[in-house]
Amino acid sequence: MGKVVVIDHPLIQHKLTILRSIHTSSMDFRNLVTEISTLMCYEVTRDLELRDIEVETPLGKCMGKEISGKKIGFVPILRAGLGMVDGVLNVVPGARVGHIGMYRDPETFKPVTYYCKLPKDVNERTMILLDPMLATGGSLIAAIDELKKRNVSTIKALNIIGAPEGIEAVKKAHPDVDVFLAGIDERLNEHKYIIPGLGDAGDRLFGTK
Ligand code: PRP
Ligand code: URA
Picture 1 (cartoon, rainbow, N blue to C red):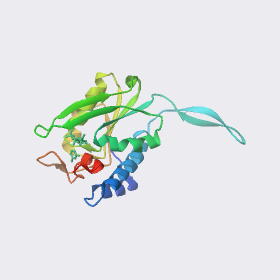
Picture 2: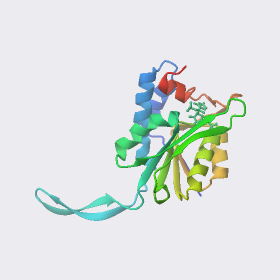
Picture 3: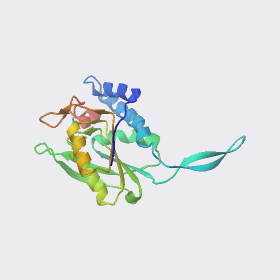
Picture 4: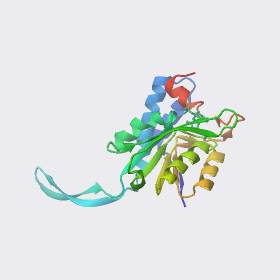
């Protein structure tokens, strides 16, 4: 059964508060999303397998560790997920990056997929989906569907803020997927925005409103 993990590290919680603020500029918003994504990536990758390897220092030899097992791929859900890519690549620079483009239909709130480009060997990797907002869960569920269609067996989600109803929906549709968040908020409003949330993540990242 997949787990839902709220990462309550003080640095993440401090930065999340600034991210939420209406007074935070687009430039600061982008930098904060990058920083939070870097910090959260430590926790998401905590279970990476290691193997022993000999290393020669200037003064002798010793045993060290290196990461083994499945390689990693990141998949931002466009647009807002793009803001998290630099942050996770700071920690896993060799990872491949796929892209899934989706927007929520303003009437039905259902995700509409308009783009999908994934690494060729996607099914051999641990794939980590990136999206700052998990609202109804529709976008994340559809993105996981895209990965499962391509036989990806290890999938994780990295979200900054989630709504309880969206998290429940993801758990129900894809109980095998681990979801990592910095915060779980109260609820969704009638427009399916997260309350209190941080507003429209894509617009705040790219200054489009
Ligand atoms: C936002 C957000 C998620 C989605 C979450 O994207 O970045 O992808 O909504 O909502 P859900 O959980 O109800 O599916 P949006 O559709 O606003 O597109 P954008 O990132 O291009 O602005
Ligand atoms: N998308 C956002 O950007 N914010 C929300 O609160 C919900 C969906």
